[in-house]
Length: 223
Image (cartoon, rainbow, N blue to C red; front, side, top):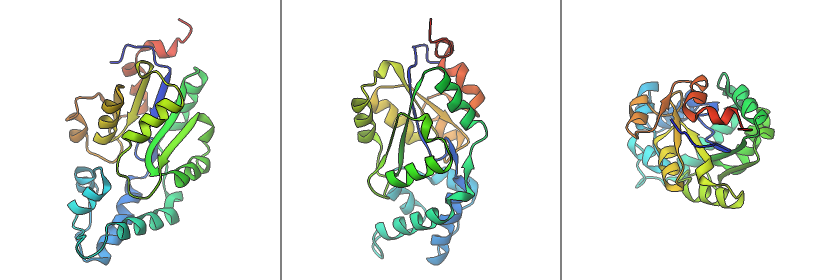
């Protein structure tokens, strides 16, 4: 449990607020089938998905001596762009954002998704207004969010001692550690519960568990 006074939340997007795991698997399986590579099951995906994304592609069989990494990475984004309306926010996501907003908590998005697409999706799902600032990446290749996180904290003058990150991957934990902030991980996203537990961070099953792990102070900001 984090016992400090939380004023700021950095949210991951894909797999944390947006339920797009199955969509990502479907898009990737199209690329794998085109290359006569084994398709991903849901369980296997959650064991092999990782950052940087290039390592994930290598794990599932792409051969970058035959094609540049950028080719399938860009193809994946084209497929995703066509089909993102098939994904939806997780149940309770918008209500949780509303609750924190009503409490005066500053909320931000720190995502490995390309920035323009990220902003478009937040508008599409009608939740952009909950976030004071949104930070995505400059390309489709999802290398790391660490430097982007540092810039977000600096630009918005956030105190790390009053900030927490909520995500769904081991990389989110790594980012939080690099930023010097605590992390909560949600197990309904892109990586298996076992992998998340390996970080030592609290792993939650749903949004309803978040208040108890952040601590009561966040819900009584006037104290």
